[in-house]
Image (cartoon, rainbow, N blue to C red):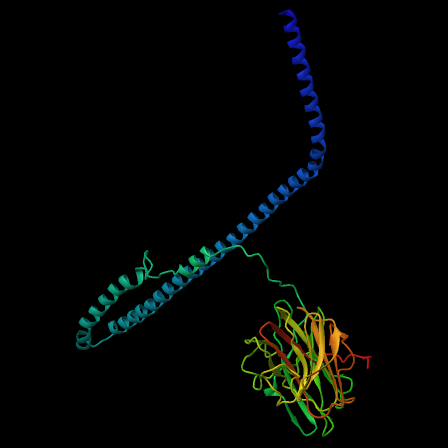
Length: 433
């Protein structure tokens, strides 16, 4: 028995030592993950501190906003009380004037020397004075509205607004910015002999007042623009123009931040567009209600000179292939631009593009469009060529040559695309043949 007890003690000691070794090994193995977790724990502590600080700032902001609401209510309460008191003072002043007039009339009657005449009016005068006294006590000395106001304060709208208070994730950017592009007021523009009057308007954003405008005019032959007016007026008359010449004009606004974009001197034409076309943004933005391609033209028609405009892709879903270019006014409006012989276009998807005229596809080029991209169209009627650009870079060779006649800006698109036109831009230089 003694031997068995000793063996049992030795066995228990060995098992205990083995478990102790295993725990030691496990503890060593967990030290490394714990060391890796330490930075995360510290970062979590910092985040917790940041959250607490942000919570304090948010609470202070909410308290300030509530205080401003209470202050506004207090000011409005003071205005209402002032109005009530002013009305009461006005009423008492009128009563006082009436009573003063009555007293002066009574004094004049008392001075009457004819007893018979005095007796004829004395009784009626006594009754009138008594009646005036009663009216004074009841009408003047008693408050007009009394302690219970006959005014009812409408709080339903305010209460509804308070109940609808909620957090707004986004904040309106009220920081100053450059002015928006002016809009030409065609109804105020006119020409007379060799002078032209141009008028425009622009909506100044909050915190960004307009300091002036710059009006530029070309030489009447598609040449470079030059400044003809700088000032605060939104109308200008230019004299000394050549007869039988076509001039291009553009206007931009400026302020202390910088110079804004040039005005859109032509837009999309709602009168000639397909009925599925939707125009917004002063006819500068176009979209479509149909899954089929629909055509919209511009309001300008070009027969000479050099002209450049860009189309910005606002929305581009499911990889459609809109087309951009020029067309005659009688081109087909219910198909892709370039399907007939009255349109010259480039249609492009997200990977590649083709030039198309009279349903003939040529010059496939790699590179497509996406949301935010710009497609530029350069119509040079001096050289009689049409060239396309994507994101300010010439896309492919010169698309079409030997162009003659009158051309209008044109776009075809379906409901997966929305674009905005930008005009009055500088003509690109150094184009490739």
